[in-house]
Image (cartoon, rainbow, N blue to C red; front, side):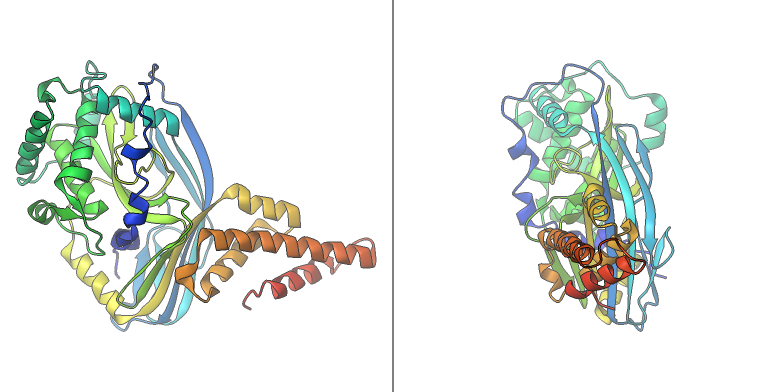
Length: 413
C-alpha cells in the first residue's frame, strides 16, 4: 500500500500567485516589539474536506493512504480534529484507487495559534533587533527531544549563512535564539534557495547542491540548519488557508489536484524562548498571517526514494481528481440553523456538489460559498411557499422541501 502523503507531493501548487502576499511585505514598517511575555492566542474552527474521485483505476497501486488533520499540542499551536463524515477509515484514511469511485473525509478542525497582529510585530522585532530576548535559553528537555543530527552538507549552508550575516553587518555572536532563527528562515526561504515548484520532494543534499527547491525542500534544509545551532525545530505539513479568489489547480500524470482556498504547504516551527513554539514561515505566512491546518508534524528530514517512485507510478497509471478545501464552521452551521437541514446533510451536499462540478479546475471557494447561499435561499423559499399553501407544516413537509431544494440545486443522485 502506498503510504506517501498526497499533501507533500501536491506542494507544487503553492505558486507565485500566493507568494505575492508574503510576510516581509505585510509586516508594518512601524511595528514595535510586544511588551509582554504571554502569547495572545486566537482560535478558529473549520470543516475540512478531502475528496478523491477516481475515474480510471490504477492497475499497479491498489490502495492509497491519505492524511487527515491530526491532533497537535505545541503550546502556542494547538489543533483538535474530529472526523465527522468519511467514506473510509477515519485514521490513516485509506482510498481504493484500483477502481472508479468517490472517496471523501470531512473533519471538524479547531486551530489555535498566536494572534496575527502580535506575531507580525514579533517577527519584525526579531528581524530588526538581533539580540532581542538574548538572555533566555531553551529548556534542556526540549533540546534533547527536538534537536536532531544535521547532515554534513549543512556545514556548507552554515558557512554561507554566517558570510551573509557578516555582509549585512550583523554580529553572529550577538544574536539571540529568536534573532538567529528568523534570520536563518529569511536566508533559506529568500536568499540561499530559489523557490522552484515541484511535485517531487528532494533530499537535503540535492537541495543544497542545486540551490533550488519547493517549500518542503527549503524547510528540510532550514530544520537541519537550526539543529546545527542547537535550536529545536519541527516541520509541519498541511494546508495554508489563503482565501484567494482563484483555486490552485494542476496535474501530475493523470491526477488533477484542486485546492479552492488552500495551498498544500510545509514550513518550520522553532522553540524560541521565552515564547515557546513559533512559526518561521517567511515564505507563505502560516500562523503569522494565515491559518494553517496540520496533517503531520515531523522531525524526519529524509526523503524516501521508494515513496516518491511509487507516487509517480500511481499518477501515471490512473486518472482522477483530488479536491481539498476548508470552510469556517460558522458558515456551515448558519445554513443548518436557517434551513433546518442537519449539519451532516449540508456537509454531504457540499461533497456531492464539489465532486460533481463540471470544471473542477475552476472550483473556487467563491463558487462553493455561492452554492451554500443558494442552497439556503432555495430551501427557505420552498419552506415559505409550503407554509403559505398548507399553513402549518405537515409530516412530509421537510422531505418535500428538501427534495425540491436538491432538485433545483442539481445535486447528483
